[in-house]
Amino acid sequence: MTTNDAKPMTRQISVKTEKLTRRFGKFTAVDRVSIEVYQGEIFGFLGANGAGKTTMIRMLCGLLAPSEGSGSVAGYDIYRQSEAIKRRIGYMSQKFSLYDDLTISENIEFYGGVYGLSRALIRERKEALIRQVGLEAFADKLTRELPLGFKQRLALGCALLHDPPIIFLDEPTSGVDPEARRSFWDLIYQTVALGKTVFVTTHFMDEAEYCHRVSIMREGKLIALDTPAKLKQHYGKSNMQDVFVALVKE
Amino acid sequence: MPHSRLLSIARKEFLHIIRDPRTLMIIFIMPVIQLVMFGYALNMEIQRVDLAVVDYDRTLHSRRLVEQFQGSKFFHVFGYEGPLSEAEKLFLTRKARVILAIPADFGKTWQRSVSAPVQILVDASDPNAATIIRNYCNQVIQLFNQRYGGQIPLPFEVRSAIWFNPDMKSTYFFVPGILALLLVMISALLTSITISREKELGTMEQILVSPVRPYEIILGKVIPYVFLAFMDGALILLIGIFLFEVPFIGSLPLLALLTTLYIITALSLGLMISTIARTQQVAMMIAVIATLLPTVMLSGFIFPIASMPELLQWLSYIIPAKYYLVIVRGIMLKGNTISQLLNQVFFLGAMSLVLLTVSWRKFSVNLEK
Image (cartoon, each protein chain N blue to C red):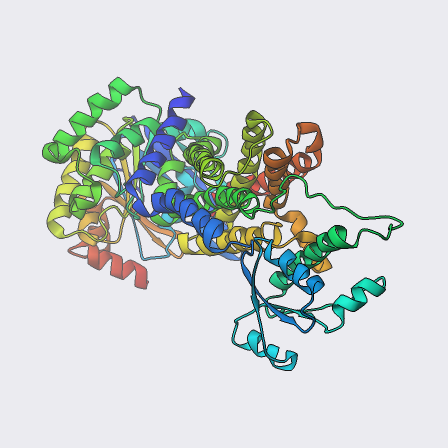
């Protein structure tokens, strides 16, 4: 495993785990994974299907209790302070999560309401979000009428509505065309520019190149963690796809 | 502002309902269809039963007996001239459902002795109807005896009076039954479907990563359905009272209160189902098996519990509608007060408590998977 020495020590840690483990019966989905994610970075989580990415994210978001190990998100303990964590994270799952039978406006109001935002704040952020995604003319249209790319950007906007410092994205771009993926990543960069931390899982290796640092999982274990440039250099490959293939076949 | 979170969920759930015409159909059209079906089409009252008279006697006495039958609204009486041995063909061709055979010596025997036998043949291919027809025949004959017999004093006489539903109208029976059925269906079926739908779509996860508490999710999701169930209950009651003229003797606030208890029981059942089912289809199947069929078959809605096999009688103890039917019939038709319904209240309350505890635990455990 290569280590990270590119980041200055003064940077704040957003997510930290130590030997975090989750077992389902005899199967170990996540096996003693230790990571540190810094504030303001895009942290990529790579791995084949079933490598443990989603299990890892679900433990960090408080959807799943770890079996062993420790972890903190935004400085709060994942075992005991999940309420505090939930207020400070945004989450968007690979399963698409807006309601098709609600209008765009109603979807945004719902997620704002679920996070307990005031009406005035919801209205203000709703307008900003609709402008940002470029859906001014469609606010009162049903969400099912939108193309998938728009829906995904809107879902990200909903996950950011309560202005969380950390955002978890679980394969957010699966199923959309390359054009829509690029505009989604534009949005991720805008988010990071605001000082937020983005924790993203993907199986698209070109997306791995967009991340500040990536970690690679195989069969529940963390097998690499560094910047894309250093990983490529270390394994003598020209792109992340080859790095990934080399590592996973190892 | 914890309440605004709950209200956001309730508001969203309400939008789902009004945007989904199928759910609305189920909620508001089904009770009307069922009421009309049960109230008119599946009428259990039997009227104008074809009665063939085979009169071998042809005396004043036999004519009086026939007139007694003709005087009843229940029978449509016509004469049959052939031999009795062929009269059964009337059953085969469905021209008659009951045959009254008066023997040739009826008049003479009547004057001479204490009892003059007549024969009544009933088509029992529909056993329930046959029982009712036989009872009516006995009543007519009893009236005849009172009118023309009279001279012989009986040691005692049984006179039955039918209370609470003197005309034996079946609408009195069905309106409370449909109320019980629809409320359990909306409360259990629709809530279990709505929760499993969120799981299926992945939106449940999206809600669970927010600071919303499980009780806010559950309450927010069920409140719109409680509201709908109440509206539906009111609709059924109004149709029952004004269209089918079912009386309402007891206290409306008491009925509303105990209906709330019943709805809570059914909702707990729905919650329980949603913890087991991962998809809407599975939820629907389990809910139909757990609510629709038992409520129709085992609650006493249509078939009296007392006439069921012992095993089914035991099973009926866990059907919430069994208790609610006693409550609705008791309040509407008999004017029962709360003190006369404590047993039912206890059972519904205990059932809700058990179901809620189990499903609450299962709900929290399910978040872990």
